[in-house]
Amino acid sequence: MHKVLIAYFSRTGKTEKMANLIAEGIRFTGNEAIIRKISEITSDSLLEGYDGYIFGCPTYHRDMTAGMKTFLFMAERVNLLGKIGGAFGSYTHSGEASPMIYDTMKFVYKMDTTDLGPLSLKEALIETHDGVKACQDYGKAIGEMFKK
Ligand SMILES: Cc1cc2nc3c(=O)[nH]c(=O)nc-3n(C[C@H](O)[C@H](O)[C@H](O)COP(=O)(O)O)c2cc1C
Image (cartoon, rainbow, N blue to C red):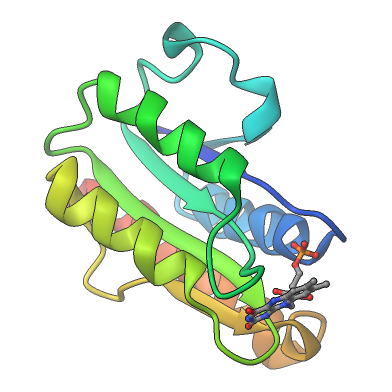
């Protein structure tokens, strides 16, 4: 069994819902999903020791939040080279945050990021059947990467 950390920020709960559904998908594949708010990850050691990492942040002002930027600098200090990775986030109209996080994971940390790219979901979709399935499938696909 592999351990995946899902670390996220959510102001109004939409990205948090995505985090919980992605965790379900990871667990469907027999792996362990640990969900944490980024505010709970207060030291490098709390970020170390996982086999996979999925980071989530909604888009505000066409950007990720300041807290997520600080968190990504912390993640830079931890060696995530080759670790499995993915990114997600809720948005209403532009959705820049999760692609930016995904690109940082792929090009800066040089992680083994999912070929699916980031999962950006319009907030109106999250509680629909399609939205729930998209999140669960994203988690499943990342869980399946450990079998390769
Ligand atoms: C002040 C403000 C600015 C926002 N800016 C953007 C934006 O630039 N692009 C976008 O797609 N959504 C934007 N949104 C919408 C949020 O991304 C959306 O409500 C999201 O679902 C919130 O996720 P959360 O519940 O996880 O915080 C904005 C919302 C607020 C309140």
